[in-house]
Image 1 (cartoon, rainbow, N blue to C red):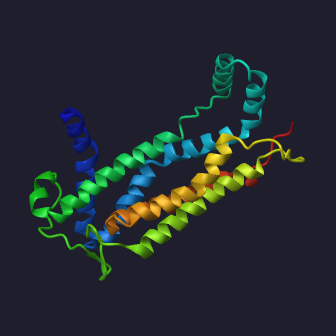
Image 2: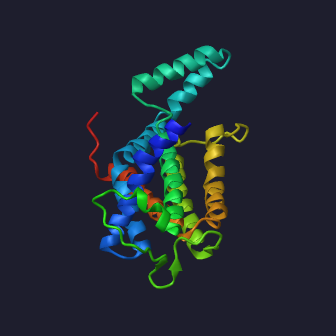
Image 3: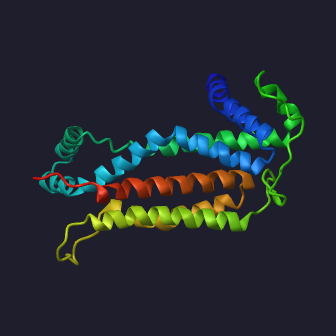
Length: 252
């Protein structure tokens, strides 16, 4: 465990701390520094996030074929699983690829929480600074003249509400995309909805609610990171999902 902790500190936690302090040396406002760190993180994760969103698009597009395979092998779960995995391989789709950005984002969130704790106890954290990063000697936790970005236990309701609303918008965009891709025709009232559709609709509301509940206990700095991250993902998702509208279709 100590090896994992050491690797985490050396590759994620300490670099993030130094990047934050380095930016703070240039712009002595912790809130703005956090925003710039978030933008840097999102730019580095751009290829991974883009691949994840495109994978979600592909998963939606092949759902009709997946349902056909499920119906064909409904009495043999083993063959059904083999046929679906073979189909994924043929289409070059990885159903688990959408989870990787979430895992990476969770790891970064944990690292940033440790960074904020280090900023609070900055005198003890100066040993983490690289030799080429100037020590500002003091970190002011008030951003824009009113927002305490490192206060633990202080409720930041407006920021949490805006972040939750933004996450709802992101989920709504993807759900509208799913509904749009459904085959046109008369719906069968006796047919039960797919498990994936149920989960997607539930997460449309559960995700923002969880964001609001958890966000109320976060320092404002983490909420700023979460808000900018979600805003960045909404913009990226909007661009990728609507790019095809401006792409001429190939002649068949």
